[in-house]
Amino acid sequence: MIAAEQQRSDRERDRIEAEARKVEALERMAAMVERESRTAVDRIAERTAVMEQNAVAMAGPAELVSRNCQGVATAAGQALSNARTVAAATKELAAAIREISGQIAHRYHGYRNA
Image 1: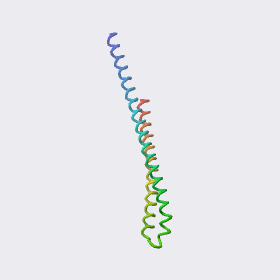
Image 2: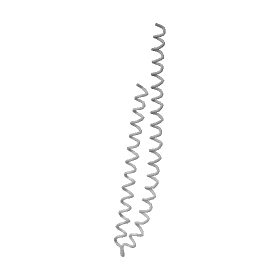
Image 3: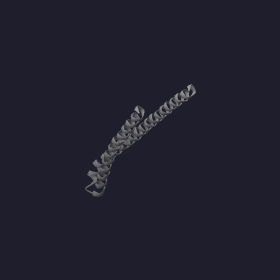
Image 4: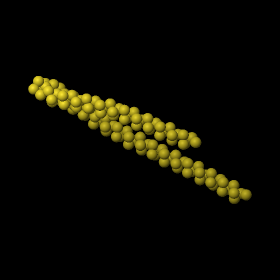
């Protein structure tokens, strides 16, 4: 009878330890996803800002040249528009990543509290 109780106690301890390892693995995974996502979004934002600055810098001189070359001005305007579109998409991507990270954290806390 004592051996059966000891076995039940050992199984419960093993279950709790396994759950703790599972929670720990989920925490590490969520932290890695958040860290790598944040790094990727930061890189995209930096490069997008440079692209936008370049596009703005190109748009000014292109307007001066547009008397002779309307195509150059149109291309610079398109580049600026594209840079702004990428910047807006980057913001949306960052928001989506934050939402996903929040969902992962929420699920992690659900597993942890279960």
